[in-house]
Length: 130
Image 1 (tube, rainbow, N blue to C red):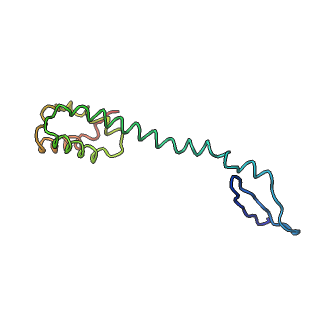
Image 2 (image 1 turned 90 degrees about the horizontal axis):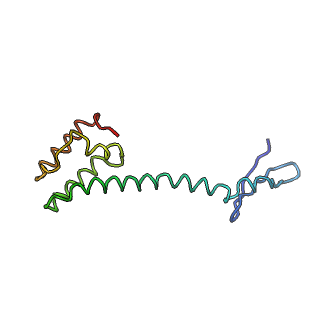
Image 3 (image 1 turned 135 degrees about the vertical axis):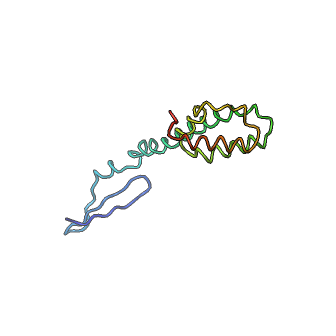
């Protein structure tokens, strides 16, 4: 086995192999390892988390619209923060927020009610359906 090394130049990666007479350039690697060859794959891999976060943001917004009837703005903010801390990045938990025990949102008037709601969510975590 001859030792090989790569040399990176602007848009291509050059591969050289050491032989008894010196270094030999492998031109076929240039077309295979060209940056343009991997660009669609890299874009696809980077798009997946982006799409997940867009769906996550949409789910949170859909959930938060349900709390707009509460007149106390500080209580709405507290409820949103508690929901975010509970669900974090889980789409399954966000989807289950409205389905757990058909909780009556109109009964949320104090911070104690918010805390009770979060406790109910945590206690019934296994009953959440997607």
